[in-house]
Amino acid sequence: MARPKPIMGLTPELSYGETAARAVETRGGELLGHATGVLDTHDIERVHDMRVASRRLRAALEVFEPCFPPKAHKRAIRDLKALADGLGERRDRDVAIAALEKFSARMPAPGRPGIDGMVERLRTEQSDANEDLAPLVSDERLVSLADQLGKLVVAARKPSRG
Amino acid sequence: MKARKVKKLDPAGPLAENAAWIVRTRVGELLDLAEVALDQGEVEAQHDLRIAAKRLRYVLELTGFCFGRPADTALGRARDLQEILGEMHDCDVMLPRVRDHVASLQHADAEAVRSLAGPSADLDPRLAIEAPNRPDYHGLEVLAVHLAARRRLMFDRFAAFWARQEELGTWIRLERAAEAQLERARQTRRAAKAARLAERHADDVEAAIEGVEPEPR
Image (cartoon, rainbow over all chains, first blue to last red; front, side, top):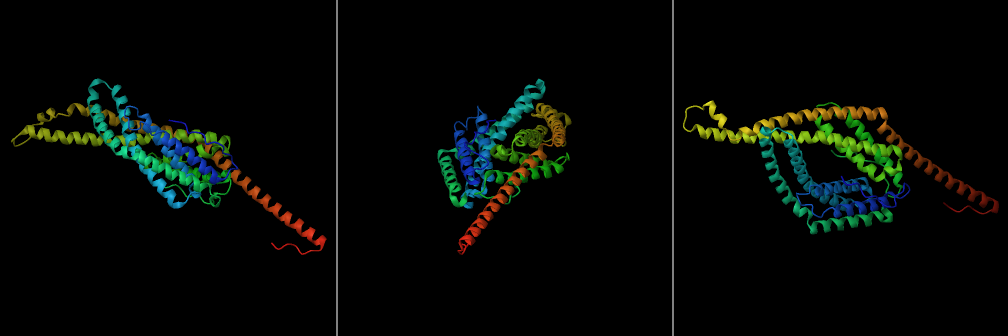
């Protein structure tokens, strides 16, 4: 699992609002940075890394919720959740396939056909999940998400919100 | 599972104090859920505890530096806890999936064997041996047993891990570090208030000496 990027310049005395702005900037950048090649089913770590980044960003949005305008915050969480769900569906199949292949490799030959048949079924589901994920990681969707996050960062820095 | 609402957060206030309120709430959530989740049959509570461990972990990734070593330790252990509970959860998800797959194979086999019987008045048991998916069942049964046994093993690991963290005071130390941070914030506020009062008093004294009315406040 990718380690989180450090958020620069944080101190215990820094305001909660400014910390929120820096956290969302860093975690948002991290998420978008993991979007490349995420639909490639031959490298399942890409989906995993992007999923973890989406969770970290969501955690930052939740931890710093009072620093953001409620409507914009709700909308960003909703869009992020849709993306995380899409990544989760793909990841779920990736993990199941990897676990079953590992299990099958350690089974005596007569036990393998059933497991391999289940892997085939999961591969179909993986492909379906990938198709559902594609629009969620399109440039258009990611640009829109980046735009929303940018607005949240600005709002968190406003003096009235810290 | 919805996260517990954290009260008293102030965007203009310092990170450390706000983080302390959040960490205290998240640790409380973890401890309350663990009480139920330590019962092997409480699958939902175990799932909720995994989510709570994840929430605590991510808060500590962001703010742990405000609480020193207890937070470093708790961050590592929250990650471990999340991993063990995640392994249990994987078994919980996979087992019904295997059963569902077996059921669909059996359904297809029943249809196929029925066709083999043709117009017979009854089904010859030997025809069931011809079921096309018959070679698949053995491996899937072994897999189901493996998953059920692995789930139990992971639960035992979870129970032992939790007991060990209680012995070491992992969560309590973190809770105390958050409390200490809140106490520091209270002291800072008290000191600031005392300084403001002292300043006013000094102004009043100065005004009395000069024989002028003190400025309205």
